[in-house]
Length: 592
Image 1 (cartoon, helix red, strand yellow):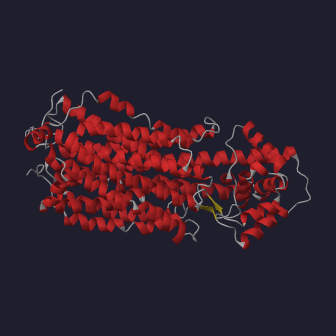
Image 2: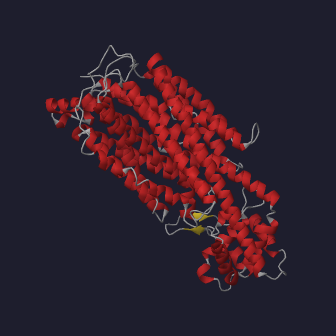
């Protein structure tokens, strides 16, 4: 395959792709697959982080602690992204774009798969950190490789299509999650957690690296720059900040990227969790009306709490015989949205499985008076309030005189497990639909911002999409799934594609804009700084959303709604930074 420089253009060509060689197309496809499969793995995390952490923490997915840890997990991913992006960016300038891109593909595939076998939350966080490092490296090396290989007139469209394909791969993740939700509803996975299966799929992109590593060449322009200036000058961080033009561009690029990254990772991708919460709450409300929590959940817990040693194994056997997932706290439903007394009591009984002798409703209530902490002293469950204790006591004492009937108890256990499976699969299906629609909108939006940026300029394009993102984020987080205007299902069908169109498309603008700000020997390093130093600042976004959810708006029925709306102010700052940067429309890549 022949390697060509980005200056090999055909001015007479009317279409952007006219004059591209087979090698141009090869690099374009490889870069699209590398970044697209990277985004595929990212989307698995976005869709499965709450179920994964709920499983690892032994809590409900709707528990505030799960939301808090989900924010922390996303921040860990972004911090790893920042470190890895800078490291890979510098190494890409020094040792080659193609070489670093292949290494990053192998690394993010391995770490995504390892998340699927994590048995503790801290191991999950560790794998996420290294996964983030590889993700940051993939973007810096892949975008630089493509921008330096493509002819000037083809470069903006090629980079825009790179992000379009990434959004398409996100759609593929949504389709896979949707399929898994359907398979879960028919018992395909049995007791095996769906989230583990999906993370294990993340091993697959490693095959791409093995397939292309012998055929991918370094760009000629990079080889020439290294030959002329030596390896030591390539990827020089001091040189990046020493020159006033490059220093100004990299600082503005970092600020601009921070606004988009917070908007996407701190708000936009949490719309999937909002979808899960809204649909779970809707289904739980239907169950309260149709099935009667008093006759199902409370009756089961009353029987179990009075004779846990004998009845807990019976419940386990009944659930196993029905091929359902084991009962957990989330399997039960409370009388109100923010209560789950039956689930809390069941969790205590399971925690004391090894010493059930002498356990009864009084000792269970006494155990709930003491906070539950992990080995590191982290509080997993607060001590119950006097109000909660009296409410739970009243639930357990009622009908104490009734003798447990084994057949009735087995049926109750089976009914609760079947309902939990039905709700879980329904929520997973709609989370997949939400992801599909979000990224369908992103596919269209990314191409739209490419066309707007090419016709009207980069500043105008960023302004239009930042303004649209601000208003759409507030609409989605405050109204989607409430049923005020439409049913929850129609809310998702209408609002998620519009949110994806606005929020994720901004990254298509970054892919076009950032390579146009820096010279060849500093380009990958500078893109890494713009896109990955921003990750450190943006890591406060998901953590901030988790803190707002757990501590500021925790007294509301659905705190994530108000937290997301409050965070949307980041898009306003993006408009300001867009107009402080240079306009690069119609200009060639800068050289020194």
